Length: 227
Image (cartoon, rainbow, N blue to C red; front, side, top):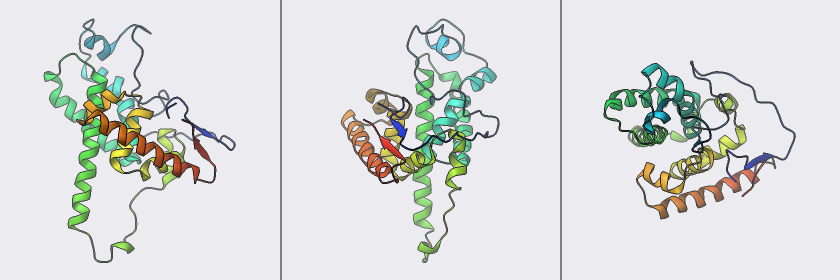
């Protein structure tokens, strides 16, 4: 089972999730994160129709309206905080805007996932470089800059303990687990998105899940990984 299909369950009482909004994006528009829809389940519209050759590319405003929520939710799962998620969403659509004329019918959602994921990885690498170059002598005393965990994860409608467990994973493992268990991408799709071998994908997901399970089991029994 996957995160998106309910692999994580509360072992204690359920608590209604509070809802807020980030900018003009509604993170609660559906529970999936840019989820794949079975072919033939409903008439193709928007970019799906364009990819299938049965429609024109939507206008820019229609494109943003169709995909902004999904991009934001994926960015929030990866980054763990609303500020970075909003920045990543804006950067993703800026990249799309510059490249849209060169886009050929294929899998538009897959293209968006690849852009969002690569921008996130670039952000992580950039920050790691900055930290190494500007690390103060008393770095152990430097306070963290992460937002309050509960407030940061509200918009994703995801349990704070689960998001904290995801955030604790090494970046490569977190990305692989999110793309597989939250987004629902296949190993082939993940390998293509990240530009890595299938064996590397399997290894990262296996190790990431193992670490995630261990962290959740140590969270006072609040959440358990079923799988």
